[in-house]
Amino acid sequence: MAPQREWFEKDYYEVLGVSKDASEKDITRAYRKLAKQFHPDANQGNPAAEERFKEVSGAYDVLGDADKRKEYDEVRQMVASGVGGPGGFGGFGGAPGGFGGAPGGFGETINFEDIGGFGDLLGNLFGRGAGGRRGRNAAQGPRRGMDLEAELHLDFLEAVHGITTTVSFTADAVCHTC
Image (cartoon, rainbow, N blue to C red; front, side, top):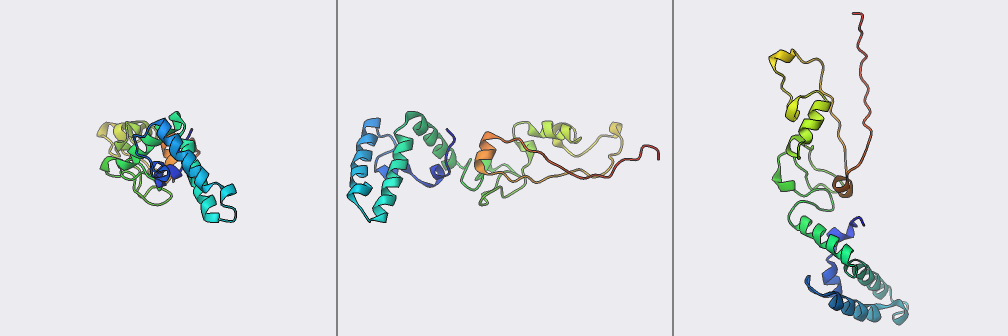
């Protein structure tokens, strides 16, 4: 079950009027009371009650399932600690070049050197040596041409779960006869 965007924006415990350490029994009791109060059959022609019923049902869908509740609590805790958020990562430990909080994407360029060894992997892949550093030592000789860079915009779920994508570029062909 992948977290939903609403998980970042809504406090389902508050929707049901229960504490975060409420038992399954307390959650079910609160849901039944609210569902009965706001059910569309009991509130015909009342769009506000219908909307509240949907909100209560959505909250119970998550909190009434032990696995979903556990994942919800973990995601909420991660967001509260500044690691994530609905518009992209909210800070990622304050790492320089880390993730900004811009709506719908990342606010800054990702510095892969700061993220669990990706600098080595991507640096070697793109010819920047260990750690993704751009310098070259004298034994390797001068570097030819410009580095290629690409900007990739991800939403929160793509960043959390990972994606596979293709990066295309156009380059001048090297003439081997000259």
